[in-house]
Length: 335
Image 1 (cartoon, rainbow, N blue to C red):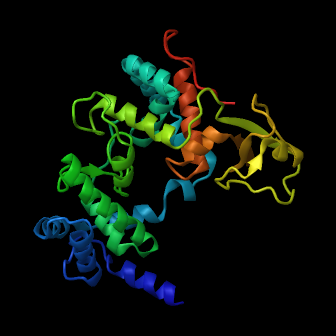
Image 2 (cartoon, rainbow, N blue to C red):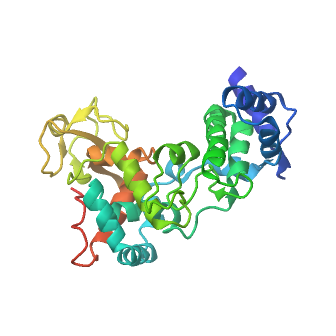
Image 3 (cartoon, rainbow, N blue to C red):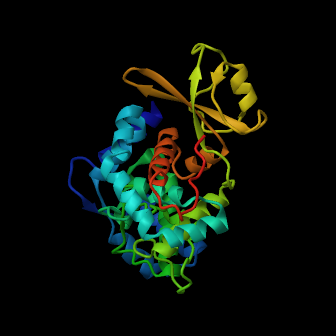
């Protein structure tokens, strides 16, 4: 009951509707500023100027409270990303950037169609990178969204550091309602840790510089363990839906493929039985449907902790690859 009351108080700070300037005198905001000055050695006047410029916005909390991955069934979620337009745009994107995608794929092992699918799912190939100021999104969620306030205070800290290190304008940078930035929608911590200067021009731009964007997405996958030439996901059947001790949609690799088969999951793959995998159980209007995700599927969930997201990326990648020119890299394996 105490926690529920605290949540209500936190949400009440944003109700009703209008955006409002962040109050520097709020205890938690003042504590954040003091921490940035003491621990990160940032200039107090600069931190106060940036933080005071933030506006908290109820629409951001509304969007965070009901992401599509939680409220939609697979069929509806799939329709968002597997449209004729998005597939056609993905193929055009691949053709336009084929040389870059091919070079990065050959060097890193991350197929170009998967890089294309990430930016296709995230921002429609860089055309929809978000309408919110990153500062407003992070400040709103850091101080007025108690369920994840600690996480977003950490991301606000990373954003301030990124602004100092990389010259990202903290008052002008725009992104998603969660503060994700650029064509690949990197959160500030990921931007600092995984973004790379693909064209070696001395700066990293994830909004408009495609060599930087492609290199950064591939590097993110490599750093999270992407395995060259391994399959990603396979369709599956489950002959006993009531079988005990068979977790579905648990985003880990605690099961082996042999164990899944022994529990009645049927699927095809070139991987051995001792390889790790996860059962993906999807809710559809006509009943459940199943997939088995392999190690590289799990890697995609490091980008977004949702099996539906990883499956949407995989299916879009396959659709993009199905019409790439003959001189392009061979499609990344799906099953």
